Image (tube, rainbow, N blue to C red; front, side):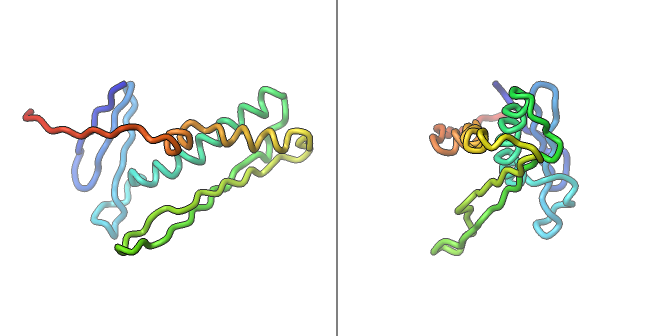
Length: 134
């Protein structure tokens, strides 16, 4: 798999993968236009949306109505000794739809924990950065 990263102007940085462009920008207070989410915002959103697709599929596979189904993701940050803000906790709460079978409550929580993005964070890949002349 390969992604091409391009710089369309200002603080914007785009990722292109399989013909889909994922635009990013920095907030106005960081020198951007705020025209798109920041890369970190996409990262945070990927956690909740990944858990969300697992939850949605769980319900669909069991023919459980999904009207009213949702998730709330809460993020906690702390400042380390060097003064940098760091993510310390991600809490996801599943809002079960009316009539959701009680017998599946624990199972849907376990299913949300299967999120691939979370698994990658828990067992991080090796990162390699190099540079070459164009």
